[in-house]
Length: 125
Image 1 (cartoon, rainbow, N blue to C red):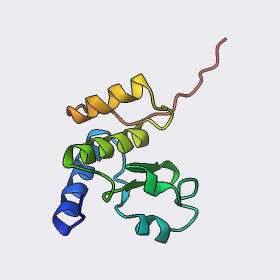
Image 2: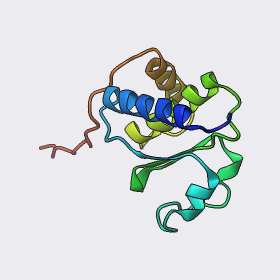
Image 3: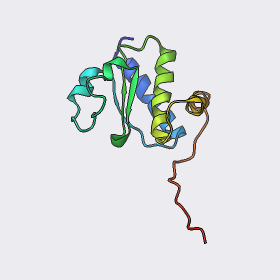
C-alpha cells in the first residue's frame, strides 16, 4: 500500500477504536522502516533490522507497534495486522496459536476485552 495522509489518519483512528475496545493504552504507531530505525535503539531492540520482513511487529515493553505499510497489500490485511499486533499488546502472555487466532477473529468482529490483570497467587492454607 502507499502511505499518504488519508491512510495515516485512517490507521490512527482504527488504532484508537481498537485500543479502547481492547482496554489497552493507545500505542505509538510506526509506519515505515525508517521510523523503526530512527526510533531509539532500546525501544526497537530484538526486531530492529528484521522488521521490514513482517507485516507488523509489537514492541510490548515500549507500547510501540510497527505496521509495514509498504509490505501490506490491501486494507483487509492492514486491519488484520493491526488487530493482530494489538491483541499481542492486550494478551502479552499468549503466543501464536489457536487461542491467539481466535482472539484476533473476535477482535475483528468487534468484541470488547476487559483490562488485563495480572493474576496474583493467593496463599493456600
